[in-house]
Image 1 (cartoon, rainbow, N blue to C red):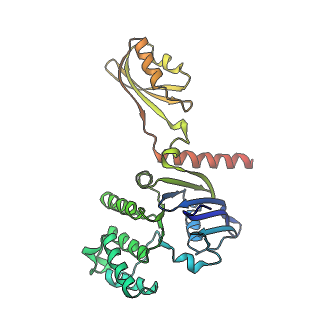
Image 2 (image 1 turned 180 degrees about the horizontal axis):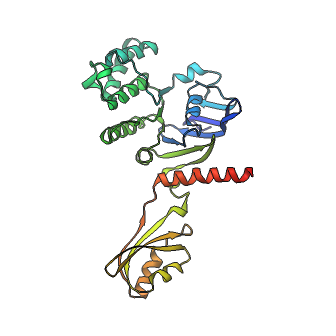
Length: 322
């Protein structure tokens, strides 16, 4: 295992009665990576996170946190992890300052380290303005920041964040996204979220789990290429016999007329492979004296890739069981 690997999961299984929540899951996360952990509801995300944080013990397989087996040394590995659960439980009757003091007490922090960590955490989480306010009076965005402050107070090398932007408005999402990116500068961050835009804008890599099995592990940019059938080319063009000519191209599955603006026709081209047909379309336009107004590839959304991957996984499981 490379020295920079902070999370190492190898052949991990976890069942609850007859239900197999996690099945033969393996992956590594390196120091300084921000990794998105995606999956439909009930796919095994929360179980995996609870396994990483030693809340659950694997039925089989190994989890190493900074090279240490968390089943054998759970207290030691927990010190390396900051965890923000989805429901973010806080003591609403406490001031922010009192809550963070309480967390410091639970962590056994004292002396200079306690004072310095409190000061840097309040600054890092952006809590200076609300430090002496009751938690019950805070907005949802500040609630999340207080929970995050509690997770990073002991300066962990690994952060595990479960739906950190859930319930936030667009401005609060942007703020939380920036905060997560800054925290990932010198820590390993594993994030679960249902908001694909957050993954695209925050994470460098994505793990996708479905029905307890890991079905994808890829950089975000590469993940978008895993479903070539989702790629589309938009063409706006003026000429004759356009659709017939476009559909003769090897890389084109079909050309769908979507609109017409005067003499200009708008086509959405569905691709049959990974080849980019735009140079061929440009050459066709020159050869046939078509007037080309617009030609671009429509951006593939991570949400579409996610649905495609999980739907294909469900289909394959169903087919194999017949």
